[in-house]
Image (cartoon, rainbow, N blue to C red; front, side):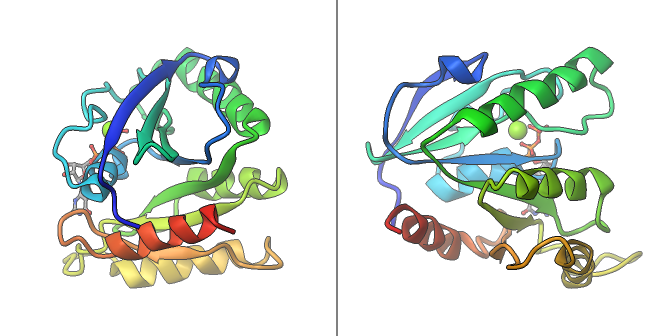
Length: 200
Ligand code: GTP
Ligand code: MG
């Protein structure tokens, strides 16, 4: 399940413009600053897979990266970026929803959630929207290395609180993985998880 090669393929402005291809794909989404770019770079063990250069709140593109010539990782615009103009925020939803509702090769959404902060309404809303639309998802908790926060709860407590809030909405709780791009926690587990989903 290791990554040998990653190739940038395309940025698309609409779901319709995404690569016409039947290879499976995973979409990465989450709030701006959640650690999306860092996670992707940690997964592929490269500093620059070109994902970090995108200005938060401004990116309105779906970015396709082909891994090992066999599956895609798709970087989506982050949501909840406070400084984004209202127009950009509104666009985000229709544009991203269009992607999720139309992309037949999508295996699962990897919903990134910052474990160093308490559950955020916007993340719960996103998870619930995906669930209502039967989009398979995996919760990927980021920044789990931040175990010594002087104030507030520890990541494991924030994760437990999030799970608690989500529980009533799912007959089967989505899979979830704890990660850290700093320590590499969860990297192999996530790669293995994705390979299992692809071969399912
Ligand atoms: P946008 O591109 O703005 O949407 O953000 P992003 O989701 O791509 O987040 P990015 O990877 O740029 O990380 C945001 C900040 O969080 C950076 O300062 C990272 O260094 C930090 N960060 C990301 N992952 C981790 C992690 O696992 N642990 C810790 N401690 N910090 C992290
Ligand atoms: Mg980024």
